[in-house]
Image (cartoon, rainbow, N blue to C red):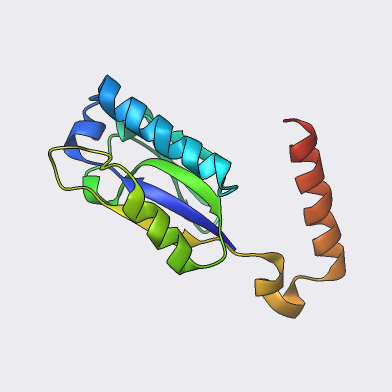
Length: 142
């Protein structure tokens, strides 16, 4: 099972406050544990929403909305993509994570990633082949 593990933004992360050396070292150690355990597939920190944009879809119309975005608690400051056996295992890993924003309350959200079999018959053999081909192309670029 794959899970997207998202570090929720704070006012400081949205203001562009960078982590100190201790937190970077602590997170580096945690990431090493994830890699050694075969859990971590990817992980990155994200720039503040002031450097981002959203595209709103309304029928055929597309509207670009430049950041920053108001609801800080709904924004993501960073993420991991993990491969684990269960949601419970992902929760146990998150509980071991250093507080991403020491000295303040922070939150990490865990969401399961859809797998091909989750889509049922609508995900036809042709669509499955396309998906496999695209994943192979992405893997070849690494």
